[in-house]
Amino acid sequence: LGEGKFYMQIKQYKEAIEQKFQFTPYYGTLNIQVDAFALKEFLSQKKRIKIDGFLTSERTYGGIFCYPVKIKKQKKIVAGALIIPERTNHPENVAELIAPVYLRDVLSLKDDDIIEVE
View 1 (cartoon, rainbow, N blue to C red):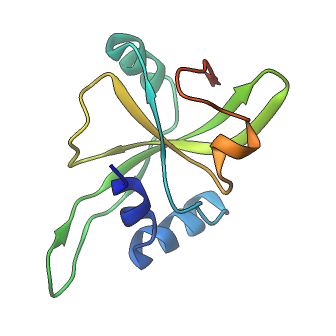
View 2 (tube, rainbow, N blue to C red; view 1 turned 90 degrees about the horizontal axis):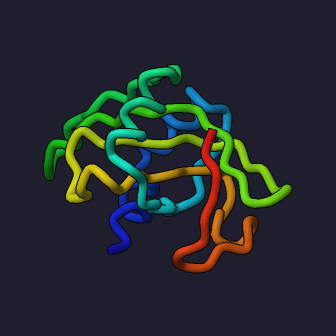
View 3 (cartoon, one colour; view 1 turned 120 degrees about the vertical axis):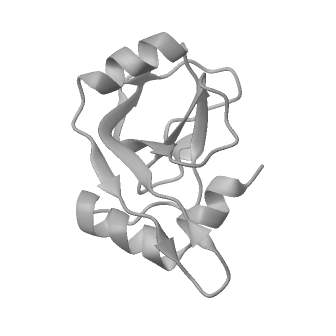
């Protein structure tokens, strides 16, 4: 849908991610399908970092819960974050990943590829 690209370009989100994760997020997110129960279990054991929502003259933007992760495919590893926006159109079985690079290129991903997130 391109929504991740839109939100990752917003100055307030970009700067908060840079401050909390020490990387500039690539303009976009990688959406992955997950088991909703397994995701909740996984996140319960990870450090949660909150990016607060904010107001502009046009609208209100919700907060984001972020979890530092390593994203792997075969021997390639990228440090990034799994993000859970407070407001989202995604079902519970879809998670979003951000990283300082375009994950599809760096990990040579195609639709339906399997990756590991830890």
